[in-house]
Amino acid sequence: MVRNLHMADFITCLNGLCGFMSIVSSLRYAATGEDKYAYRAMYFSPLGMFFDFLDGRVARWRNKSSLMGQELDSLADLISFGLSPACCAFNLGLQTTVDTLLLAYFVLCGLTRLARFNVTVANIPKDEGGKSKYFEGTPIPTTIALVIAMAVCYSQGLVGDNVVGGTVLQGTIAEFHPIVFAFVASGSAMISKSLKVPKI
Image 1 (cartoon, rainbow, N blue to C red):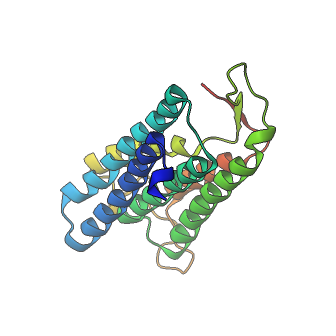
Image 2 (image 1 turned 90 degrees about the vertical axis):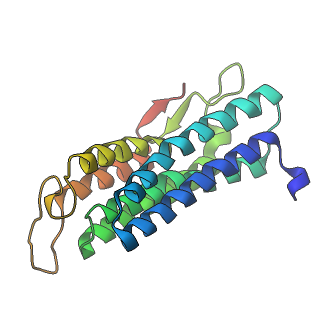
């Protein structure tokens, strides 16, 4: 199987590796409470985005792409820009039952958005170079904005009991942090069919 992979596919795997290392760093933070692991978890996301940007450029430069590469790209993106940000959010304080259900919604939106892209990409209008003119819904790497916001909040100590927006219905089964709706909005934008984002 390795022989069938192109250079761009190996770069895509590095994106997936960054996502996995981010999740592992989140787990280490949960186990130790050491700041370095929280920051490391968030730093791996921009690195994954770099590899996500690079793999497409390399594929076009070498004029070599495949269905395998397309599937790899989606799976790597789900890890780096879906699961990884959700794990960071949980670590930084969004840990109530309602919080986790809404973070699950965010991850599932990313999953379905990537699946939809894979099955509809052939039907999206292309430019002269064969590149899709737009995305249906926001691309999943846009969740990097959430990661950057979390990094800023963490640096300011706005985590745990001090999370931005505080806690609603505290002490009840419906307790949640309103800031979690930033993830709900991001997930909803990903699965929107009416929202068309021009592809750069």
